Length: 82
Image (tube, rainbow, N blue to C red; front, side, top):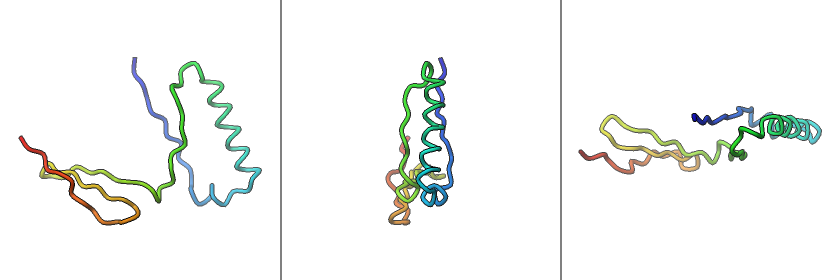
């Protein structure tokens, strides 16, 4: 059976600026979704904010470049060998 990943996109700045009432409402909406689909959901966790993100990109030469938002410096980790 196929499994899927659902990502709920949100405006981080708006979420951070939301008042307590709006934040509570959003959490209740997510909770209702989870309750309505509990029989098919396998888990659910909040992701960290984008300022902690790490990007992983494969390069043309077979290598992999990792960029963290904190350093903003690309770092080549390894090159694929055949």
